[in-house]
Image 1: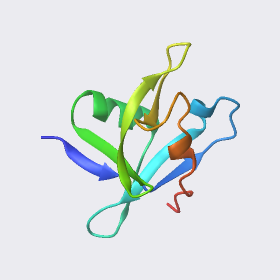
Image 2: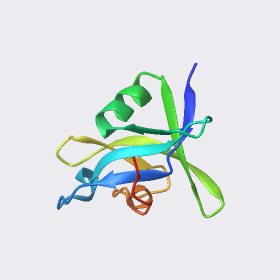
Image 3: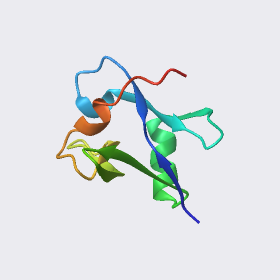
Image 4: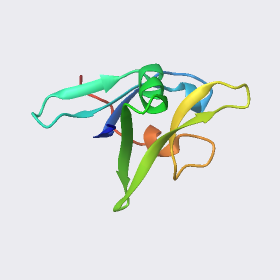
Length: 96
């Protein structure tokens, strides 16, 4: 069974390519504690059907999906984004 998590924050790196800037995605567990995953961990969880991630944007929900760069590198973005993960990059920094 797939578990759904809302992505509420990210941690960014100073990288030239937008898809390489996300170092960590995170959110809040039902008990109020924080969770965080590297993009590699999140991608593996999405691909094996373990996890599904989403964000709330403009009153709508958008799924976080796995995309591939022109060089074939996998990265995270929302289904509402074009090529760059602009919705995720607009999220606040994770405090944990």
